Image 1 (tube, rainbow, N blue to C red):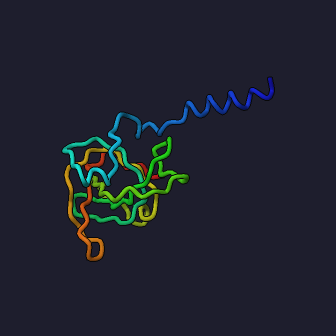
Image 2: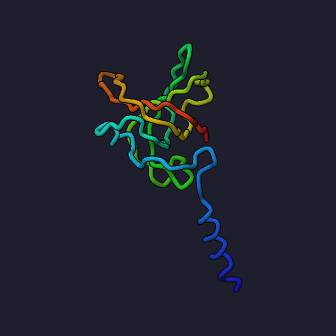
Image 3: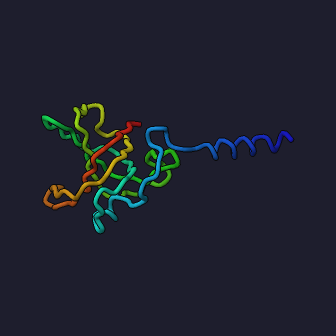
Length: 137
């Protein structure tokens, strides 16, 4: 009986593994790289990754995020470190660059379109997300 108890507890805890409440819901499984090839207007997404830049404008702020594979909590996975492209997530509020840069985030919202910005000399098509939630880990 004592040998079975740890297995049962592990199974129960694993079954309960899910994202935090603000990140729960039904979202597309399309990653940013695939969206670049096949854009879909108003695609409902939950993407995660590492913030590489913050840009503040008078009426909104945008995070540039290097997308990563999510784990069961919708956080960037430490086991699977594959890059899934980049995306930009914007909110109509100020986002402190010192607080967000190089941090893991998960974003929910709708992808509006592709935006072309430069990475050095390369033109890169960023999916632009109108963010509902920007969850800082």
